[in-house]
Length: 381
Image 1 (cartoon, rainbow, N blue to C red):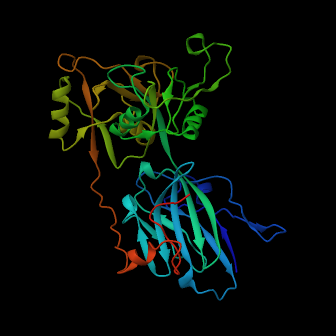
Image 2: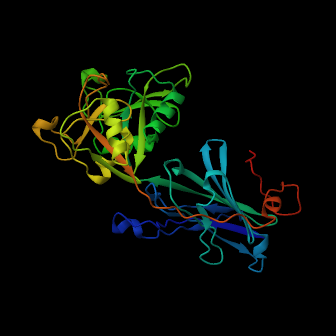
């Protein structure tokens, strides 16, 4: 018996442009030994937070009379070079979804040989690389799909100041601001779009880097080529840097609260609550600037105690010639008075999934020494 696996690209959320809606073709070849070679099309599957997306995976097997009930489909997320997180597994009609993917991941079931899954209500944490594995009684093969998110990268440091965060503190700091640590590819894309930041920050892979679009003596040396400056992989517990965070579209709206007078931090928080909102986080303001095109030349409090304002259309009186989110620091919360940016969450309900069929858990989680097709809750390398 032979088994071959293919992968393609398909976006289920409304495409941002016509090109993103096209299905890309993937070819599978066999070498002289008969071993299967899986080739995936260049590019990534792209969506945004809150969207729905197909992770495409197709297979064929010989002979064609192979019992479909003996085919196992398993999806895992590659969380590190040698670490995998189980997402979904199916054996015939039996299915099981794991952890935070429950109620959000389903087989596409577009016909024979389709092992694609659909992820609904995509989260920031869904970003990354996924493995599709298809197994029959004696053969198996795998393919990989990269899930990318439309979003924005922003540098972040807390009230304590610059270069105060260990790796795990940087992770927490991004999460507290409605974001995740950025990947290198996300930072590189932001640099291509003009991000210029002179302070080194953690990335999700444990490296420390920073993007320079305009080389200058204050940022290494003015003769240094523009690009991503890389400090390499650092000691996650012992070394301290800033962070580069990534966020995507909002499930709500950020707005500047119009008031007759400016307020301190405590008053700002209460004012947002009275408007059935919460004081906005830094990541939410960046997302609003990027996707809502929020443009406001008025400084306001944010949840972390910083003062910022978003500029889409630069003008002289609003902080210079470049668009971006202006940062005025962390003033005294009691005595300094500013406006406030609030965030009101959407009330849309997410679709609820179904529980696995009765008996599916026992059957699907049997080990590889069973006579049935194997599925393990924990990936064994």
